[in-house]
Length: 235
Ligand code: 6GU
Image (cartoon, rainbow, N blue to C red; front, side):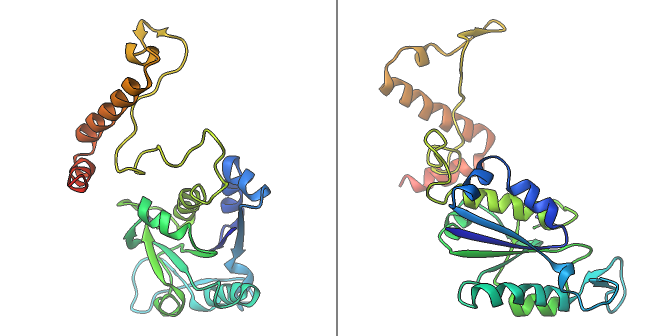
């Protein structure tokens, strides 16, 4: 069972998104545990404030160290320091998330995601608690919640039991470093477009070979970077 602990100012947003569909089922079946810890619950400010101006000036506000640290500490107090050892800060400054990172993180017992907001978080608390800084791509979002949800989804589907038969995690894009081949369902003809003849042949070896070829063609065309890596790994 993999435990996700998400430190955030928007716990409802995270819990809504992650208790739906396949991940919701995985929670009910006990394959994963997901909790959102509201950072605002831990501020010592009597008005519930969690942000302040940056020293040296500049645009926007920063999340203060105290509420972030105390929210993290509340997780340590409940699960122990050993289990609370992996703290992932979602930031555009981080290393870009990829399938290999998802694979590695899926083997942990606990993952703590720290979602920033405003212009960021006081560096001193990051130095004390964060073990990994991760981005989900080269564009800017308003906060770390969507990235945390993206990561939780990608990681959770790799936990044994989360996907059922017919939801295999193995045959999909990136698992072998290639994009997926095109797929077709009924009817055989739609808008005058025929399903490729070979898929109706019943010859499984030929179908497999065709799909492999399509995957290679697509990858070469759409993702030459992935195609080169794949070619290199074949030697
Ligand atoms: Cl992790 N955070 C924010 N705010 N924007 C992002 C991101 C993370 N990854 C890509 N853009």
